[in-house]
Amino acid sequence: MKRPAISRRQFVQATAFALPALISGCATVCPRASSPAEFVRVRDGRFQLRGRSHFYVGANMWFGGYLADAALPGGRARLVRELDRLQSLGATNVRLLAGSETSPLVGAIPRGITRAPHDYDAALLAGLDFCLAEMAKREMRGILFLSNYWQWSGGFAQYVRWATGETIPDPDQPMLAQGDWHAFMQFSASFYQTPAAVELYRDYVRQLIHRKNTVNGRIYREDPAIMTWELANEPRPCADDRTLAKAVPSFCDWIDGIARFIHEQDENHLVCTGSEGIRGCLDKPGVFVAAHQTPAIDYVTVHMWLKNWGWLKTAQLGPDFEAAADKARDHVERHNTLATDILKKPLVLEEFGLPRDLESYSPDSSTSTRDEYYRRLFDHVSESCRAGRALQAANFWAWGGEGRITLPAKSAGTFLGDPPCEPQGLNSVFDRDYRTLAVIARANATLTGLAVTLTRRVPGFERSEVPG
Image (cartoon, rainbow, N blue to C red; front, side, top):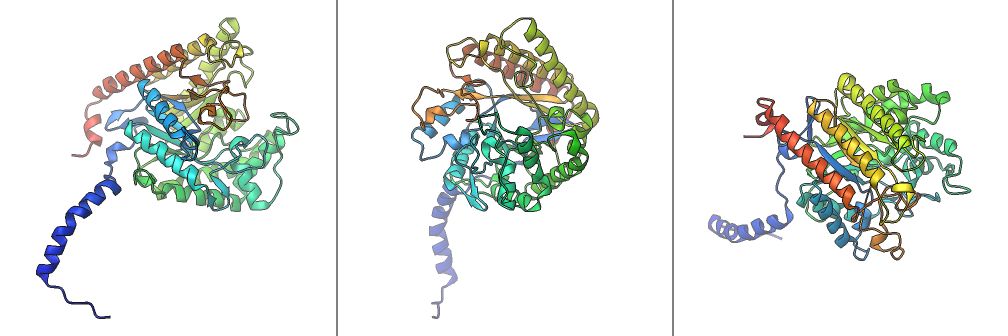
């Protein structure tokens, strides 16, 4: 059918009437383009944001996207309150689960974001959208871990199962946490040498990087609320020394390959491995260094668990705690030296925790041991920042907020910082832990002051990275 002719005058008139509506619509649908200065960068071995040094004490809150599932009554309202509480402590960084896989294992969360190959849970992804949008309102930034070496969120083992059809050795059978952990760990580590499994993981990562947030319209790769794509939670090369020689090259190749792939898709965000550090590399510093030497990894991480590693039997102040605290400082300092002198990359102590005194789970019980432990670690971060060394940030494990195990099952209030396969409340910081909250707030105030002071000491540092 022939279209009627339209004069230039008619075209101009029609455009003039339509333009206000187009502009109005774009104001609500099209987000403002972000300046490069809005993204956290690494410059000369230091985190930088808006041309200033960027130091922080943040939280682990793996369940942010799950809590924001629109079908969970009260979930989004609680998430808003939790982010407000963290903001009041000066916390600007939250480490979030952004990749999980539906798994048949006893200790795994029953619902994964990836339900089956290329089948993604739209409601959970929308929950992650909501969480990131709310974080953006508060100038918070997220570390998004994309899968897991361990079983509790599905993880690498589930990708291998999808790719090969093999049965995963369940570390929680016949009893929770008392199965064959060695067999599970070897199975999980076979991921790096299973191309079909890696490709499934890569497919998920690709779609997440290019995802459009359903709440604020931002494309993830263009969203400053994301600080880091983290390859996985605590990836390890293998389970023992017997397979180490064969495993390490595959492990390092996977890290380099997937990190480069992410940077090719997204030039705005940082990439890290999510490694435990030397401990997660079979206690071999050389393996840790080799895994992080690629320029595609922007900074390094270390995790530390006094109880799990047998450094402390009971959470109470005294000689045993002092000995464990000395070990903890030495462990972090060992990584600080490697990151500063050899890798020349920032270091984040991104997982550490401690039970309440005498391992009570009651929110009303004392936290004096944990508070002292936190204080010493935060002081270590401050000392490192002041000295211009690699350790520049920390994320405690974990934020429990107003969550309580006494609330009705499947309610918004039952999400705690501890994964569901662990005792609930074990390492969670609750909203009524006022002494702990004061330690966190004080640390953030110190780091914020240091960032301003140290930036001023470097002529041109701030000017050099701010457009205009």
